[in-house]
Image (cartoon, rainbow, N blue to C red):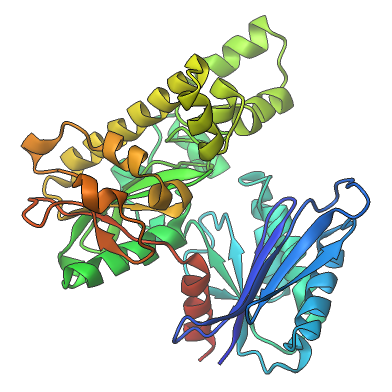
Length: 398
């Protein structure tokens, strides 16, 4: 059984061909810099299959062109997708609004609805739609399923999902906390329960998805009860290029005093803020290099990042009351022992301790980084959104 998983970003496409039962990946890759000018000979597609890497050089005009290249590379590597007998195609879709809160079989009406939700995710949903339409043309006879980033948080308690603004305005404009990275939070929280040897319905946990985009969630008995991201993926933690939480008055202030229009503000908060806005870089490895050279701006960016992260951990400890696990996942969460240690430093009186040796170990498996006798286990669990999407798509079409 093979499922193709597609994640179409604004200027990229990530993909995997995998077995949803075993999780074995037959091929994977990424199309980058879609619609951007590139230097002659620049690699824009990298395709890994059976231990071998194929590359494509040159500009990629649009998502449709990128996917045609991908299908050609699949065929060259021995996996002709048009004859592979695919069971399904699973598409990551960022925003489902109030309309979509479970995996959904794609048809023309579903595509139109996803497109109409672009006002809530202008950087993401349009690209998702283009990717879906392109693959539907290339694989017209294969069932295709949309899996929504917001779905896991659809059932947030009213107090957690409601913003304290005029209720009529909020209702008319679909304004509520939707939450994002839901596929990751759901997958990781399920894996945590497995590692603990417990049923997910008995576990209260905090999951910290820390990558270039970052989010935290509070999960009680397998159900999300709070999350840091909101109407859009901008709210919450400090991220690679996004500000996270700010005083909304800053927006009005910039419009009145600096002549910022809405597009300039959107660019500032989404593209030129966060770690990048404070330090000039958004890659954590580069940030650490700058810190090691004594760069004060980089050190401050890191301190702000950790401060905001600890703020959410503390809030969710109080909100859940009883916590059975705290888990780090995604690029930074899985690979930065320093972030993990600093995020939980000084919390021994709350039963939270990070073991330095376990934390420093280079291990790709799900693992404990707290001492064996810790009151609240701390874990690192690699996320696998592609596998989660493949399994969701398989379950729907079976």
